[in-house]
Amino acid sequence: VNIERLDRGYEAVLRLTGRFDAHQTTPFQTVFRAISGDVCIDMAGVGFIDSSGLAALVSSFRQCRERGARLRIVNLQDPVRLILEITRLHEVLPIEGREAVV
Amino acid sequence: VNTPPERATLEARPIDGEVRALVRSLATSHDQIVFLEQAASHLVRCKGPQDFLTVLEAARVTIGSRAAALHVQDRWLAPVPDWLIDQPKPSKRRRELEAVGSAQPPRDLLAIPFQGGWAVFWGKPGGFEASDMRLAEALTNLLANALQALEARASQAHNERREHEQALATRIWRTIVSEELPEIPHYRRRGLLRPARGVGGDYYLIADEWLLLGDISGKGIPAALFAGMFVSTLRIAVRQPDVGSALEHALHPELERSEMFSTLIGMRLDADGHLAYFNLGHPPALIRRTSSGQIETLPATAPPMGVIKMGAYPTREVQLEPGDMVVVYSDGITEARREMPDGSSVLFGEERLRNSLMRATTPEAVLALVNDEISQWVIEDDLSIVAVQYQPEVA
Image (cartoon, rainbow over all chains, first blue to last red; front, top):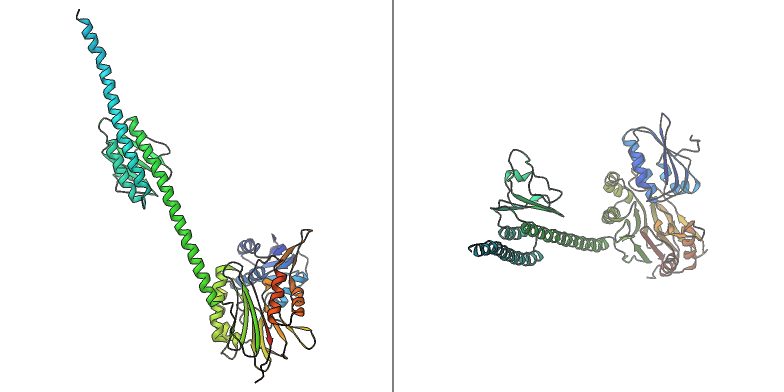
């Protein structure tokens, strides 16, 4: 996964591309922990997620909740949405629809 | 007339002096050779740096200095004078040292650094000679080798201990998270549990009339610890009216603190073919119906354990007919990968699993088919699968 961070004033945007799996969760966590405010995770470029990737999303959700920040997960590709639905994590994680992220 | 004998005396004196010097240096060489032989054989048998002091003392006597000190592994092996305590290790051999602090080092000394430490000799009546320097260097070469040998031995012992502990932990884990499935009346069962690295986060068990199979997020030892906790807790939880909520009460806080979660599917297999199940974020169980040959699925009923507190975990029910087969598995199977000639990779996926299930009529056959198929694929995760078939015994 390539992790790109953009800041647009009211929230930090993390734009992910590639496979979101065990090889990518450590760099993701490092970038994520450096953010103090609200976060938007843009998954438009992610075509595959495994259980490590799911764990990373759950962990970022917990961290935001603990520090009182808002988290949004946007632009899911169908295979990723399907996995979130199969695991019913879509009921827990703050998943929003499509949106253009500059 | 008197000159010749006088000349002879004049000539004889230097010759006499050379002979004496030669004899003295031969004696010195002999002492040094004896010292080196003894030092080498002593250092081969040494157990630790403290044994170096005996060799250092022998070197001091051979050199004829008043004192000597040795610094290895960041410490002086014996008490040293104030002027020496805080001296930094010199980068090359020295015959004098600058004062560190108020105490003045002696004028006559030998300081020789080596890989892993340095040695100092000081106080020799008449001063140190070139042969003393050679002996001291021979000594420090021996010490450097001995230190290396000691470190190699220590790291080998450390590795052996770690391997032994790893093997022991794996054996213990295997008795907690067992691949064996006890019998369950009226059901035929077969399971396969294969961690990616000795121990892992996949687990399954049969407790009372419950079959449970779960997958802790992550791999290796952290996941394996939780797998053990789940197995132990589930044996008690299945005796509670709401298994999921009993489990949540016991394990949710620990999971949350450790930033982990577990998917889990649990099914109560009653003697009359009635099946009650909950599925916490786990890949759907598959049921192959004997009558129609169709496959049904048991999808997730709640998110994985440890993500969010649900409070209650209601079960859903299905009815099995004799011959019906239920397969539960972890994503280690469906996410097995294969590289394609064009460089892309494909996943094993649920479809291939369904195909194996369609072709098999017993749990043993399902596992044999899946095992055959998956052997051609790259498995990076823990892998587990259990097949059970409803086979009521006639009373």
